[in-house]
Image (cartoon, rainbow, N blue to C red; front, side):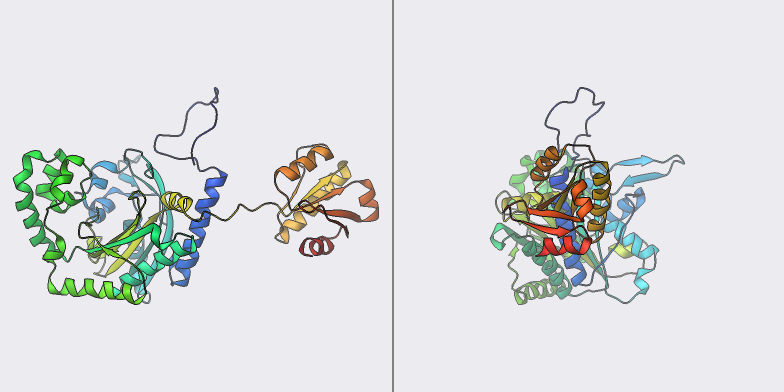
Length: 428
């Protein structure tokens, strides 16, 4: 993914920092992941939704949380020509929830299951696996407030990873429970008491978090704050009986489905809308988090809808490309089924029409549209890896027959210049 192999002196600008040009090879990998994700989601009953690339800024301040790093530091926010504040979508959940409320989707039979592939935008320091423009696959379910719902979500992601050839031993599913709002009040008080002893040693961001949202202290990536997290209070110790029971039910569901997991009591996630279940998919080799999610029962009401339970996850497409690259890899790129070379103007016109007919029959066919010699056309057919080739000239047009050649075995057979006979030769 990414950059040109040589400098172009005439280029007026390069791609903005933190963005990627997904060239054909990489784009095909992303498409393979997206197609697999949407197909597996459909089997689980999820329907695709597409939301705008930008929303009113208030949606993310209210839904994601104005104390989060995303809202405070990372959003691309601008005023439109009428002075309305808009923001490029930093994540998919708030937009999906807004669309479901606004369009009355909660009036349909519940649970409501929605999925999406979308581009997101965050102003972050670019590094390996982290970009300012990136794409996500997400799955959201509304109207189900059971631990089995969360276990089923994990199963969807797990089945996708299996389909993509990512082995169990390449990653871990790390889970935690951050309880309900009542649990978190007690936990946040405990965090304030603990961190107040180190207040003068905290980074500037954590000093603000200590008062406004102390759970964000556990999420701090600043090395200077890392040592304090080791002995910080754990949210699981503050879960009420109901939340503890829910978490145990979630673990039992994963056990029932034979899905391996690890309890990581340090996971809190960086978005304010989470409640109870939280989880991350973590690559063992380098600690890369390539997907995450959890439960957010308060989000719909927070955005102005009637209270409804909700749960979901999102996977980074670019990060999945990197993960698969370390494992089984992607299927080999497809190559043309047949290249039809032509000698002369009449033959070139005939080849163009025949190529179109083959494409309409779902055969990947190519012909010359550059004006190459027959010799050059055949070199091109070999270069692009065409499975079969055929040369058409005046003699072939007169007899209505041509030689179909297997480019790998060099075997050849004569076929009629009609669609059915060419298809018969290819599938023989």
